[in-house]
Amino acid sequence: MSSTRDIDALIEMMAKLPGLGPRSARRAVLHLIRKRALQLTPLADLMQTVAATARECVNCGNVGTADVCDICTSEKRANGEICVVEDVADLWAMERAGVFKGRYHVLGGTLSALDAIGPQELRIPRLIDRVSSEGITEVILALNATIDGQTTAHYIADRLEGQVRLTSLAQGVPIGGELDYLDDGTISAAMRARKAL
Amino acid sequence: MSSTRDIDALIEMMAKLPGLGPRSARRAVLHLIRKRALQLTPLADLMQTVAATARECVNCGNVGTADVCDICTSEKRANGEICVVEDVADLWAMERAGVFKGRYHVLGGTLSALDAIGPQELRIPRLIDRVSSEGITEVILALNATIDGQTTAHYIADRLEGQVRLTSLAQGVPIGGELDYLDDGTISAAMRARKAL
Image (cartoon, rainbow over the protein chains, first blue to last red):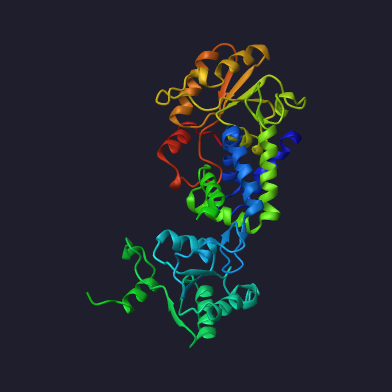
């Protein structure tokens, strides 16, 4: 069907997005075609705008529309504390929780021998620079509780040892979590870190 | 964060697509921003093209880029048979199976008293017209095996009774299906329609 070439190409591109597959891409594209004036055109316009303006913050790696992001330039944020995360999505999750008022540093991944990702491939050298140049007193390692995440946290902790206070997020039972559904590792960690009532 | 307004708006629009939610929209948008030159710009361009060219076929309701779709105009397709489906996605599913070589008719939904969708809201009058004007001999009702789908099939069958041969898709055990995972209705239908070996 030659005249549906563009539609097929659009489905194929959408299907490659994380979280989507061929079936959900077809559904999404059909939905957009049905509402093309109200949704497809505005969505395409917005994508053009974002493609033209979005960039990574040269300081922390957050995503924004300026060379240095809002969080790095904000005067309302506390200086002296950096929260290190793997990915911008993790930074957004921290911001939704609204519990941290310092600055961030987005590594852009984790160390991985298998994928040949060393400190230079991440923003680790830049983090080391920031810790001395910005007068940082505490680095919170908010990396994922995976093998690669924890390896990366250990590497950074080694590099910064003695220069700043190093902390990591507490591990334990998630709020609302049921013990029966938790893995053994989480239960062990929560037990070891038990608190007096 | 004012300077991420467009990014937030893009996430919000993507989150409204069927099959996506806030979390998968955030992941998809971050992925697109990371690959903005290679993926976000081409995707936006393609969406603009599709928004400008895609339209519903005036004859059968299929989606394409011409007023009358490829399937309706194709000389390779058999005349005389119309396969009636609820949605363009169903038409695509039939085409992937590659087993039907006639024409299609996309209703655009099912009759639903609850949602006040009557025959006029669907393409049912146009189907009745086509059956007489195109010299149709068989109408295959390939509607979903849901209450609304079957109600619609019965309504169409009533309207076309005596004019054409009316058929519907066989019901039974899906290929590769395990009895243990099938609902009672499917097993009953398969049992009633059992075949001699």
